[in-house]
Amino acid sequence: MTQASETVEEGPSGDLTVRTIAMPADTNANGDIFGGWVLSQMDQAGGIAGVERAQGRVVTVAVEAMTFIRPVRVGDVLCVYTRVDKVGRTSMKIHMEAWARRFQTQFREKVTEATFTFVAIDDEGRPRPIPQQG
Image (cartoon, rainbow, N blue to C red; front, side, top):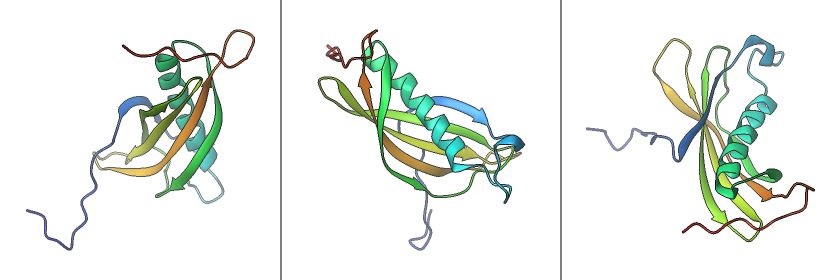
């Protein structure tokens, strides 16, 4: 039983979409993984989820309120979870959470989250309608 003074982190929300390992080439001068590398992994995950939902090409048009909670370190396995939150006529909002499974342990914790906006595009790069799910 958990006491009231303890905080328990819930598990990830959404579908596991990208899973990769943080490597030494991805670090800053402090030895932590660059935030831009984490952002890139999240953008890739959102692109995968967006293509599946839009049934075709999508592009990233916005990133809202990205919050870096904890650092990612070399050897951590970064897992990005995606959840399509809202679908409009040509755009969609996809919420993402990035979790790190710490090197040589099974301990995992949320390291960042954000909502990305993607637009479905046609072969000429123009916005196109997203198919309705039925």
